[in-house]
Structure formats: C-alpha cells, structure tokens
Amino acid sequence: MLKSLPARPLSCFFVAGLLLAGGVAFLAPRWFPALANEQAVPEAELALRPLLPPGSRILSSRRLSDTEAEIWVESRGGTSPVIMRLNAAGTWEQDMSATLARGASQMQALARQQTVNLPAGFGQTAPDQPPPPVPSLLQATQAASSLIPPVDREQETQRALSGAGRVDPFVPQNVRAPEPQIVLPPLPPPPVLPPPGSGNGAPVAVATPIPTPTPDPAAFARSVQVSGMIQIGGESFALVSGPGVIPAVVQAGQNYQTAKVAGVSVPERRVVLSEGGETVVKQMEDTSVIVGAP
Image (cartoon, rainbow, N blue to C red; front, side, top):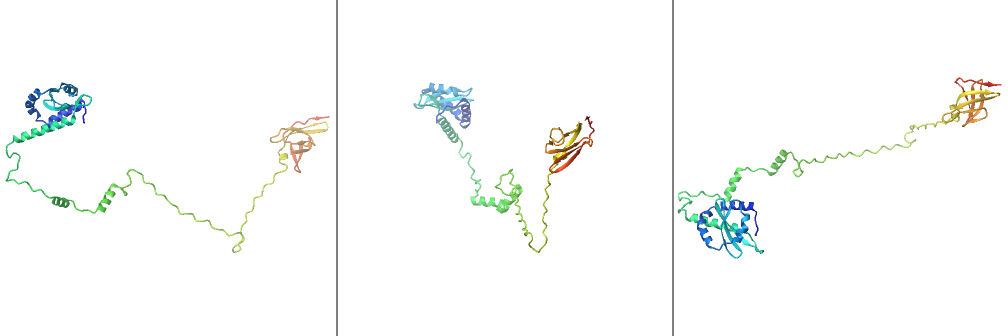
C-alpha cells in the first residue's frame, strides 16, 4: 500500500528504524560513495523533504527502477533508507511497506556480518555442562495437578455463590427482585337462610315498616302571624304575614294565600283562619294601636 505520512509518524518511524537497524550507520561509509556515483533523483528528494522531522537531512538518493527510488536520510545521528515510488499521477510518494522491508533486510545483513566476526564456539554450551532435561507434557501436567487438590465442582459453585450473596447466578446484580404475590384463599359463600315459616316452627321476626308522616293540611295557616289590627266604623281589618309571602291587610271573608279569613275580632286581638278543613286561631301578641272610628 502506498501512502504519504505526516511529519510526526515519519519521525517516529525514523527512531524505530534506528533502533531496529542500529548497525546501518556502521555500513554507511561503504554505501554512500557507491550511491554518489549512481544517478540521483531530485524529484523524489523534493517530495520527501516536507515529510522529514526537524533536524533531518537528505544524504543521497538513487534510482532503483523507473518507478522506485532510494533516499538515505540522516536523523538524530543515525542513517536510514526511505523507499519512494512514482504513482500513476506522476508524483513521488513514500512506500512504507518497501521502506520497512529495506530496513529489515539491512538488519539481517548486519546480524550475519556480526555473527561471522564472532570467535568460534561463542555462545555455545560447554560439553561438560549438558543442558537440563526438558520435562514432557505428561510430566508437567502431573506436577501441576499435584499442586492443586481436586475439588467438587458443585460444592465449589455453591460456596462461591453463597460468598457473593447471590442465589441465582443468572439474575443481574443491583436489580430488585420482584416481590412475591400473596394469593388469598377465596371467601366462603354466604349461608343460605330458610324461607320464613319453614323449619321447626320458630317465629320469624317481621320488620315493621316505618309510618310515613301525614302532611299538615293547615300548615300555612299555622305559620301566619298577625302584626296589627284596626277597626273602622263597623268593619275590622288585620295585618297578616306568612313565610315567603308578602304581608297583606285582610278582613273576614277574604283569602290569604291558601288560608281563608273566617273572622277578625279587634277587641279580642285575634284572627280566625280556615284551611284544609281545620280552623286555626291566631292571636296578635305584639302591642298595636287600635283606632276606632264612629
């Protein structure tokens, strides 16, 4: 995959490349003269320059093929190669995969060169010190099983659940369990009473109906009040009033609402009313001036 990296990832890549291929700097004096004699690629150097971290500089470049170039960069005292590739648009961009592969191959070459320069027998076990025996898989399993005593799976599960305070491991924690519903037994049916007069002949109490009060036929006549009386010549008049009605001056033979005035007696200070077949005598209780005319 071909892609251009920003300056920050590229600087990290240079540091990692110097750590992985640390011996490349020792081989640089041999390679740089050879690279100087080959054809440089200024277009690839120009495309790589904005991607370099601060303090880095380009040492040399060479063309590996028509679409591939190698550029040596110095950064933080070390050198590392960067592979640039020409894309379909005619622009040079960094080939990360090829750059990593280039650094890995140089690291392997450096490792082989250092191995050749080591003295014979360096790093090998002496003949008088045989390597320790490696236990087999069966021996290792038996040794591990002897350290852990066997336990009953069911007992261990119940012990873990009781220690955690959970009865059901499949119920989520911190969730309030539904309260149990209390089912009450059905009520017994009401007792069936025998009909009146049946059974052993015991008397059955019969409820006495409450009598309905009879309305008073002379209720209005009883509520009339006499406020004053007057006698003019041979005729007597009385000033009467009732609840909720307008007061009126009446004389014998006239009607006042539902009551009939049967008589008016000024000397006796009374008025006789008739209503509903009953006669009601109303006495004037307050003191009034009785005026008489000849």
